[in-house]
Length: 213
Image 1 (spheres, rainbow, N blue to C red):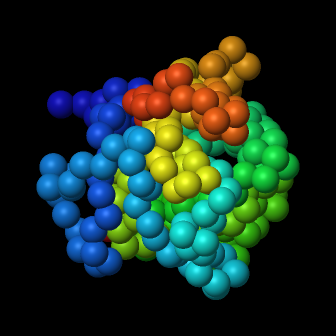
Image 2: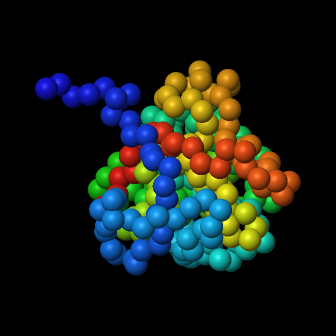
């Protein structure tokens, strides 16, 4: 049987999230406990490219965006090569949002990079996250149910998970689809900042599967 096309192989994530699991524990996806949008976001502390730990708890009082990424994934490249991801990052950070880009690719898998390589990607792509964090064991990614790159989350000032899913409503790797897309993350940020309910709080993420250990 021939290898399926990229578009057929792309995994469309379900709407359920998973609760925090102990560090170093690799659980089958069906064994992950369920967490929900509207509940407290799983807490975590991960090392950034600076070597310093960044804790979600320390961001209380600020809106937080979590962006799961893999720079080699064509769906991630779509949003960076078009400038779409950078545009949202800089817009959000300029409004006081904390933007944390998370890499859960295990060592030796696609998307895994060193701290210097991650910083170089940030510079060359003119990206604007608050920090790039490493999750090599996949513990935090599994805690959030991150299945794809990109997979996006918005946490409000009280630490509640308010949005989870796709960056937009065009599940393709075509850069030409960016201008006409409805950006779920931007819409969620606007609603959360205004103290209003997120109209579409959960969507199906699209992209490459996260390369967990």
